Image (cartoon, rainbow, N blue to C red; front, top):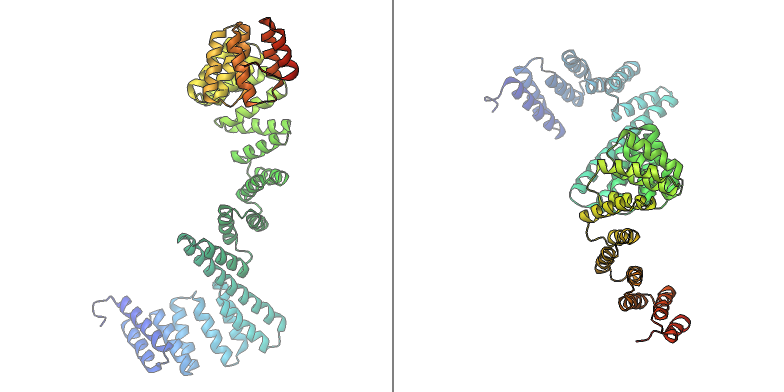
Length: 450
């Protein structure tokens, strides 16, 4: 049957056969299979162990010990064999050798739940109840941890099959079996986040932080959830903890700075944004935020410098060109501002506000025809803004193009019927035309002549 196998493979197959017979309580067949294996390899440790197992069940304890000893001579760090010998000594009420064997087995392989339980029973026989209780606890703990790993593995399989609810249930069972199983918390938290179960995800991450306090990524992920759920103070605390553990990860700085900016803590936000670009100069959004803070603080010159640096990082971002145009407009550097707005429009032509701000700049240097084109383009993109019509109407007033100006303000009033300023402008136009009666009706009664 085993003629085509190597001696090792033949002996191994016979040992498996012997264990199968032993499980079926066919002791003679098991014994015969062990003898065959030992004929092929007389000192094969697995065959020696299997023979010991068979002889133990047969009640031949001394012979079983002898075969277990032969197995250990070939494989001296075999924890399972030490456990088996310990059990034989225990059956003979030879307690101290039994204890020594069990302890050696545990030393070699600390996760043997059954060995701890056997050791607990021996201690109980000796009246050492404290030790018995301790070893029984260790055995139970290992057993639960093993069950937890089985649940975790099953949860992973279910998750890979897309069975989310079932996977969540198994992850929870794994945690229940072993509250220190960090991998189960981590995977469960990720799924809960994807399912929008923020509260439970937060609980998972907080438990993880207790288990793994030096893991910065957990604090970072917790901070993101706090931010998404509007718990900004908690988010700040989480990101600060992440940065304290790992000051090199840029996105913790970014999230923290963004929150501080939203909360109006501009100086603190500025500090974190500057740290961010110092270590990671290619994160362009930080330049935008620094520029906005500097503008709010009245530091316009510095804001110009920051926006220009940002454009070196990302010259194809319309927002940078627009922001630069805004600060240049504040400095009344109209030509430079116009150039910046044009560049923003080249990159994103469908943003009506870019055209609107360009038109304003053109109006300020007296290029009214070009400004009109800018306002008209903005209106084509967004025809629902009363302010765009009003701005265009104001340019027509400057050109004394009264009919087009009136039409613009009428459009503005259609969009916003309580737009008092539009009525005032139309009244002004009628006054310029010499029609005081129409002007009076428009100003006081908000009646438009049609």
